Length: 167
Image (tube, rainbow, N blue to C red; front, side, top):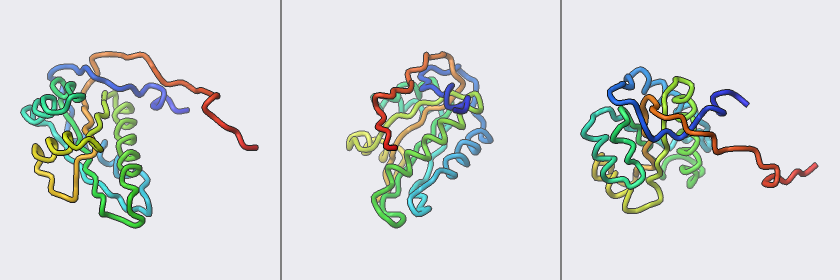
């Protein structure tokens, strides 16, 4: 297992004023766009946010994204459910793009936290209004990003009881 997978954590406290750069965001987005997608459909778009007022509003309207108030950046993954063949695979594709962002953030020494929007209708509505996202597109999640101001313990571990071996 790679070290970046072992060290990745959900970070909810960020160092105040230590800015994530546009170059870093572009590296995160490049990693996202390298994710696998069904039939290479790439059913995603992204908002890269560093504007303090927008980060604060995300923290206000999303009940589990309060950490955006201390984050210096966020990426909103936008799902394009009508893109690509076969249809219906956008959740897996957007999830893979999100995981790539999280792993790239960890490799850069950044902290990040995945905050779900989809499938909660109220969250979709409020984020859609904030960012002016038109149907059929919708916000899939918010990823708070910044320099960590905490070091949470690992919660993941291998559980052989959850594996069925077919040999």
